[in-house]
Every structure is written in structure tokens, then in C-alpha cells.
Length: 455
Image (cartoon, rainbow, N blue to C red):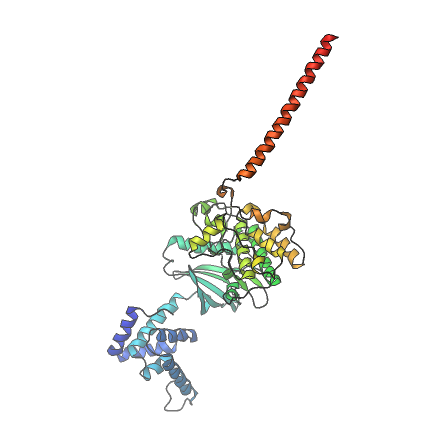
């Protein structure tokens, strides 16, 4: 939790001395009884975060309230059964009436902001760069869903609203078992929301954060499921542009789901591509070289690269390229002079076949990568069957090619002096032979002419 702001600290100090009128307290008390369990839980955290009460004081008041609720309704000592935690805390002199009124006012305003018609917000799941994700219930079918709501600060900007709506529209184009599917989208009370299926389970990042290194077959199975998702997206003219461990969810039933289409793009949308020209869009540790350069012609091979970087991390415990800053990391993805450490050198338990597949995925020159997810899936299937990869195996010089960048980044080829002398010697010898043959041919022709004249 963030530390309380100066205004919050000032408000707490002022309310400790000022108090409030009995009428206001009565109204606040009625509002307090109407709070949901979720609101009350958030209130507890807010009270503790602001320093208005200690965790021990909150727990003591909760225990006392539970004791009161257990008493017989007819007991003259017991207050109304609907008494809230805030009522108890005010009665115990832990909070003042003024503090309770302000807390309820803030919670009431927050509750209005989170109201989405047809859905009941249950709890906050997380926060990203563009929105906050909540667990909710879709009331019409009694189904648990996830709702992403655009951040307040961004909801005032037309460009961010357009990007948010575009994410929902792109998600609606996809329907696949390995993709978190879209359900609904819209705007209510100035709040832009996007409803998607609720997927329960950890991400690959959760495991990597615990220093887990995946076994080869588990890693290949997961990566192949993501490749199937990319194949589906590619067939619909889409690229994800942000494949990374954080966006791959491992469901409780053993499934794999690719999430977060916030950076996804239609490959055929030239206007969109030009608007992002020169912008490095993606996550530094997993971004493709062409994304680093801000190219407008990014295609599915960029996602293949990012999946390769994710798979590399899964089986080695390390990202392909490290660095002290995002800029340094991204430079290494592009720089042909920076070699990739083969994954089977870092983890000798994985097969050379998997090493070759990953290195092909991570080719800096995209012409040397898998052209389509289909080719990649074929090699994954070979690995799962214990066979050598078919596509990557067709390129015996692939390890040298992997160190090369796209044509624009190639450095002039250099040859050492010894090699140059060898080549020059060969050329001179060839020229001498050609010259000798020419003399012999000329003499032969002269002889033939003289012979004919003599006759």
C-alpha cells in the first residue's frame, strides 16, 4: 500500500479534534450498515494504511462486533444487529464520528465509479498501465468474469479511449481455447470497461519469480499452446506484440491461455502502423529486433521471437539478453555483434533439438526465423515425440545466421590478409592458364591457315 498523503494525514489530525454533529453521525451510521463485505474489507485496509487505527485495534473491534451479533436480539445490552464495524470503532473511541463520515463519503464515491450495469464487482485483481482489472459476476447468467476498467486519468484522453476500445474490438475477433476471450465492452457513467473470461491460475512469470526452471516437455507443451494461439491470431490478421511470461496463464485444469491484447495490432492497418513508426513497442526482455527499430512492417515473426525469448527464459532461468537499462537490453536484441548464449549450454538437461528450435526463433534476422506458427508447431511436435526438429534442422548454417541482423544492419564483410593473398594467387593462376590456352588456340589457327595456303 502507498503511504498516506499529506492531505490524508492532515484530515486525520483535524478530525481527531473537530468531531461532527450528531445528525451527521446518524446519517453516516445508516450508510455504514449498507456497506458490502467487500467495501468493509477495503475500508479496513484504508483505515490501517492511513494510520487511523492499528491492525490489532481493527481486529479487536471486529471480534467485539461478532460477540454482539451472537447475543440474543432481545438482549437490552446488545445494539442493533445491523451495526457496522465503523459503528463499533466509533463506539470504542478508535475512530471519531468525523473520520467515519469522511471514510463513508469516499467509499460511496468509489462505489459509484465501479458500478457496471449487469455486473457485480467482487474484488480487485490487479492494475496495469492502462486499466484496473476486477473480478466480477455477470448477473444475467451468474458467471464469474474479469472486467478491465480504463484508468480515470486516461479516460479523459480520446487517444487512450480509442486504444482501449480497439483492444476490445481486437479481442472480439478472436475465439480460441488458448486465448482469454472477450465477452462485452462499453461505457457506463464515464467509465470505459472491457469484460473478458475469468481465468484462474498463475502466470509463467509467477513461477520464474520463484526461480523455477521448466522441464523440457512441460516448456514445449506450454509454448506449443501459445503458438496455437498465435496461429489463430495470425489467421485473422493480428499480431500480439507483447508475448511474455506475464501474459501466459497456466490454468488449474492444465490449460494455457494467452492474455492481454493491449498492444495487439492488425497487420493490414497501414495507417495504424505509420502512426507508430519509430516507436519501440513491447517489453524489453522479450521484444523483437524489428519492434525495437520501430518498423512499420512488423508481422507474426515478431511474436515468434518473443515466444522464443519466453521459452528461453523458461528453460534456462535467464532472459536472452540482460542489461542495466531497458535501452541496453533492447540494443542487444538488435546488435549483430552480441551473440546469444545457446540455451542448451546454460541448461545441459535440454536437448540440442530444443536448443536449435529456440535459436531459430530468436534469429535477429527475421528471414532466418520460422515463417509461420505452423512451422514452429511442427517442430514442437517433433520434440515432444523425441525426434529432431524438421524445419530448424533444414538450416545447418543457422547458428551463424542467428548472429546476423536484418540487411540494413549488416556490416561490410571483412577478410584477413592471408585469405586475400590466397584468393589473389588463385585468380592469377587461373588467368595464366586462360592466357596459355589462348596462345595455343591462336597458334593452331595460324598453322591451319598456312597449311591451307600451301595446298
